[in-house]
Length: 395
Image (cartoon, rainbow, N blue to C red; front, side, top):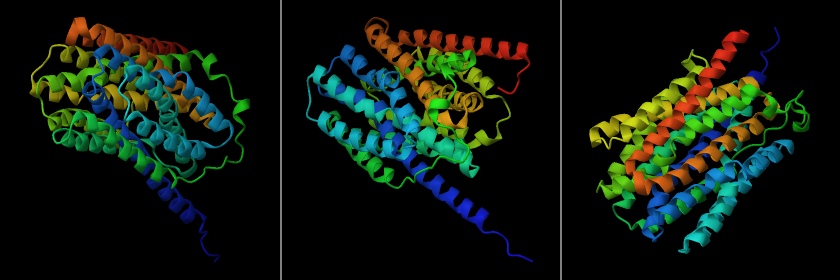
C-alpha cells in the first residue's frame, strides 16, 4: 500500500498559519479603530476643535472610502499585490498619525488627516479581500477570522477608556500611534497569496456596477452602516459631558462590539440568507436609534448597545455574503472596495449632516439616523421581493 499523501496535512498547516496571521492583522487594524472611533473626537475637542469641525474631520475617512479607496483596492488586485499594499498602507498610516500629533489648527488637521485616511481606510477592504481569498484557498470560514478584529476593537476601547481617566484627552493621539506601530509590525508577517490557477486578470472581470442587485446591496449596506454616524461622532462626547467615566464610556462601546463578536462567532451556523441578515440588521438599527434618541438611562442604554451585533455585525456579514454570491472570486477585493466606498460615501454625508444638526437637535439627530436605516431596509426588502419574483432564493 502506498503511503498517504502529505499534501492535505501541509495544506491544513498552511491554512492555520494563514488564519493566525490574518487574525493578528485584523486585531491590530481594528484595535486601532477601536481607539480611534470613540476617542479621536475626544482628542479633537481636548485640543480646542469645535463641533462643526469635529463633524467634518471625522467624516474624512468616510470620504476617502468612496474616492481613493476603490482605486487602491482595484490596483492592488490587478497587480496581485494585496499583501504589499497592506504593508505600505500600514506604514504610511503610522507616519500620518505621528504628523498629526503637534497640529492644533482645524484646517491643518483636516488636510493631514485626509492624507492619512487615504492610506488607512483601504486596509479594511484589502484585509477582507485577502481574508476571503485565503478562505477560498484553505476552506476556512470568514466570520471566525474577522471576530479577532472585533475582540481587539474591544480591547483597544477598554484600554484607552481606562487611560482616559488617567491622562489628558490631548494625549489620546499617542495611544493611536502606539497601536499603529503594532499594526506595522504585524503586517510584515502576512504571506503572499499567489493567483490561483484558472483565475483571470481583473481587467477581464464583469462590470459589477452594471448589476442592479449588486448596486442595491452596496447602497443598502451604506445606508444602514451610515446610520451609525451620529453614534460614532458624538456618543463619547455626550457621555463625557454627562460625566460618565472613561471606563464606563469604553464599557458601553465594548458591549456593542461583544455582541458583534458573538454574531461573528456563530455565523457559520446561520441558515438565513445574506439578504435576510441585512434586513434584520436594518430593522434593529431603526429600533436602536429611536431608543437612543430618548436619552435613556444608563441601564437601558447598555441594553440597547447590544443591538450593535445586529446593526453592524449581521449587516456586515450579510453584505459580504451577498458579494461572494454576486462577484467572481478574482475580483472579490474590488467588490469589497465598492462596498466600503458606498459605506464611506453615505457615512461621510451622515457625519457631516450630524455635525450640522447636532447643535440644534441634540440627541434628536438619532431620529434622522433611524430614517436612514429604514431606507436601507426598504431597499433590501425590494431586492428580496424581486428575487422572489425571479425565483432566485439563494441570494
